[in-house]
Length: 342
Image 1 (tube, rainbow, N blue to C red):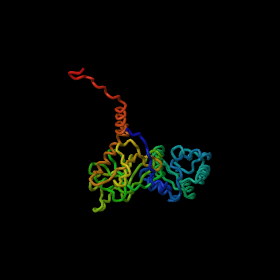
Image 2: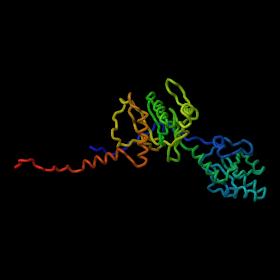
Image 3: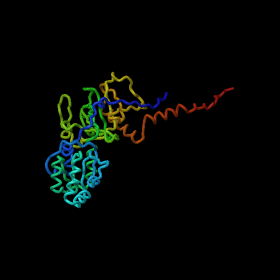
Image 4: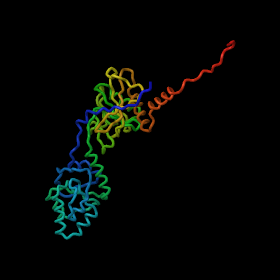
């Protein structure tokens, strides 16, 4: 009898320990100064201030005196328009307007296009303990790049205990009990030319609730623990092509001892999902027992998932063929009688 397509979702226990990082001016500057070409202008003050929204604000209206709906939780960027406007004001009014801006609870100020604050305005920021940075980047380019960086900083993150591999562009998280053979599977996959993302501990971040991005903790990046051998540097042993810094998570594979699997799915019609940070990820459980080539099975699971992403589902196609055969009427006999029939 043909089976019906069904789905089941398993919620990751790591979701209970998800964390949304606190982003300070200090962490923002130390993490992104090089990429955003930022340099500190003036004294190092206000680095403890929190950035409370993952986007950027241009305070042009605020400098003109309009503070309704002013986004004070965001990093403030002064571009060519704001710089020109401040220069056009009389000295006393310029300081007054700027001081009023600095009295708000803004995290920090960034001067784009390499502009510098006038000494009297820099003194106001020092007095208010607000950090000022300068970047040669064009204002809109800085805003775009800084927004992307902040969105990453603000993204909720969890730690999954499992190894992450890139197989033909499919990001596969391999889970399982300690000693089940995860690292051996990963080694087998690396030998086949695939890339390691993380071993044993994987950090997973939700990007705007759209997709999950996986990477390794800084300490263990590019390294693996192989029981009986110890810690190995994968990039040095297998070459630089054997590692990836990060990869989107597309499939979760759970390795289980054969005796612990209640029922083995032999057709694949039922779709199972593993929920991480509220996002369902396709999930398969592969029973483990001596003699099975687990690396090969995980490779096939990744290939099958890639085909499903392209709209090709082998189990559904097979089921459709089976139903078609079952609905076909039985063939009629030829009815040819033998010699001597009466």
